[in-house]
Length: 191
Image (cartoon, rainbow, N blue to C red; front, top):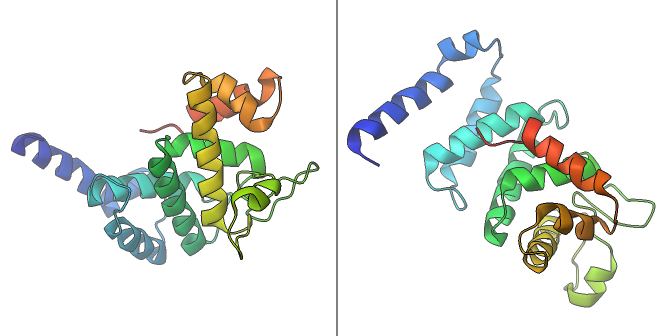
């Protein structure tokens, strides 16, 4: 990035996080949440840099706040989603849209078919490839399995998202993939 462009980016970034911009956005920023976000952003394992981490975590945390009110849990969840999605070569926003549809962000969700956790993974996968002590209710395990499965289906379907989502959900209907796609475009889009 060119120095002038970088300085402009930094200026905009700090304005967005400043009390003035927050007042303009009519958003009350919890000091504990600000501290958590700064700490999380410093752990940039899956982000390009600290600034990318702060912007993404702040943005997604605001969107997720109503569904996951506990700030420390919300930030930890977002960090894990970003890490596992990036590791698998997926968009973290896509994974958030899938979680929204599959479990409504409930890590202990169980479907009528027996799928478990955030990304609704079938328990037979633990028997196939799990390690002793693995649990699909453990966020990291669930995200790792779900992201890996989704990436596999995307490759099988030549990156056709709708076809891959149908396979992921085990359905032939378009409704599931259209719902995920709608959430990806209206709630979990990347700014």
